[in-house]
Image (cartoon, chains in turn cyan, blue):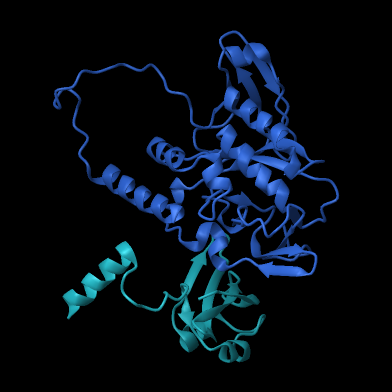
Length: 103
Length: 269
């Protein structure tokens, strides 16, 4: 089975032949309502995000700031980005929603 | 795709550099050639930079009222960007170039320097800086750029050979995969821009139409690993780095590129 899956994956990568869903954009998938309720600028912390949603795609800068990105299913195979800026003290300083990817 | 290919090729090149044993030339049965010196990669070809200026003049329609300057930017955290000096150096010519306190400069045209295939020499070490064109139309609001200016910056920057990569191998790969046309007019183009300050969000605005750029267009795609970062000239400017859809003609040249910075003006150092 694994060999067949691998062969299919290889074929997809070469000729896009197997019928599969397009890959979701990088980042943990979290419902938009949960993010909106749980992530509050000036209050939420890195530890709370990790506990609530698990690890996601992130980037850490030399300044100590970090940007984390989540993907919220938006229907029809589309996803809406939710980006969080975490300050060097580990507190969320900004958030933004969007854009929504096209499937 | 081109960005993916470039990353893949870079990975292979990086792996090759790290794993292939470097045999002495004699052991490999090869003859040797003594090279006294090589041109510092930070030093730029004067001819190429003049070609970039000529391209600016040819394609002014993208930014009809704009001015062109060149800009020096840090590439290593240790580089001191204060008091940088520049000169055009040929076989017999040596012409100082005035650098403003914001590290921008205008390059004078000099025929003897062109004939002598002069270099533009900076008073800093190899790989410590990178270069960009800075094309600015009047009347653009603070905290934003004009898309047509950026389109022209890309073409001038590529024509002038401004992107400074630390590895000669990476530089060769980069050049092989990226002509000005390929980089600046293709959806797979990979020309990096740097904002004035660390960015959190970038929006395009053309009249009533507004769109936020996805995370994948910020921070050099958000995919740079610590191992890869030294090969990118965004090494110390990662939080200021963004792509814009230069190729997308549905966004007119007068489109504004607006920045939300990580820190509000009152907080910024």
